Length: 323
Ligand code: NAP
Ligand code: 8YV
Image 1: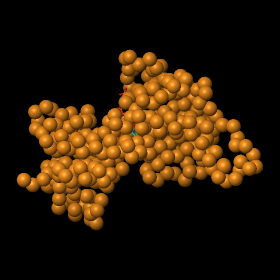
Image 2: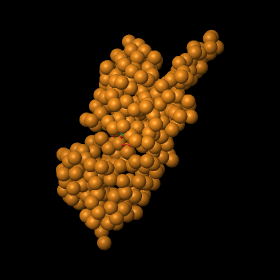
Image 3: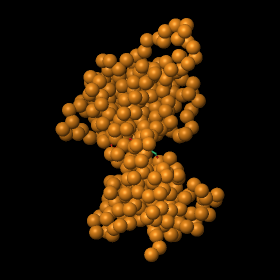
């Protein structure tokens, strides 16, 4: 019996490629010299896709190359890279990789928060430049006595909050809905929370619903002692307004793992000394990326074994008995 044809849009870990090749005929989009010609040729045979937030947007036009697609297995918990509404209209299931990265992303968020406040990268640069020989490194701001507001108290937001409890800081959150059984202070408006805290951590999905949630008004409300940490998506923060706020002292500092036009980071941000910049690495350990990759494999294998998807996104729910 011939194997099911799967398209991988960008190179994933060797373990993922090997596992998929055992079970499927795997087509590698990133190796095609002429992408569209390649997709026109193999598109009708493709029944499943393995995509990632890093390999471009799977929009309606892209999905149009695959008239027989049944499932898009996306690498990453955020799936703003996939037009889930176009997929839903076509009856295509979209899966993501939730939960397996919660702890890794939360660990990195705490690391980025402390690096930003205590100016760890700046201190490292100071030592390497021989400056310590001339004078001690200047005293830094602190996490002590701060109030932290989490924008998006979901799976990862809660893992961040649990870690913050150990640091003895006050914790608040903002989302569209108040969560029962959560004891942290709830703010129904982001501006209200920004006024009440002096650290904001963004960990919401990206996409139209959260575009520029953190704008000039929110940064002003956060204030001159305020720190912004963005581990959500670049689109959640108005980057131009943030640059202005960091330059003018409207806020104190920022720690950013995500940017509006990744991997391009504005020179204005790179030139600033009160910001810590990371190249979208929050889930980027060998351990966690393997677990995410395995979930991509498991979703495809489960689907094509007739057992349904393991982690479908809410916009493309699985109806039992459909396959
Ligand atoms: P999740 O469990 O679905 O949580 C998302 C949270 O965001 C929910 O609490 C939701 O609360 C809130 N939210 C959604 N829309 C909102 C809005 N318009 N305004 C305010 N809050 C809103 O998702 P997760 O697994 O924690 O992942 C969250 C996101 O983190 C991902 O989608 C991705 O964008 C980002 N992420 C980044 C990295 C990285 O490498 N930097 C890694 C993993 C994830 P309500 O429904 O009550 O609004
Ligand atoms: C990954 C992420 O870096 O899960 C997400 O939403 O942003 C990160 O874990 C990304 O998905 C890799 O493609």
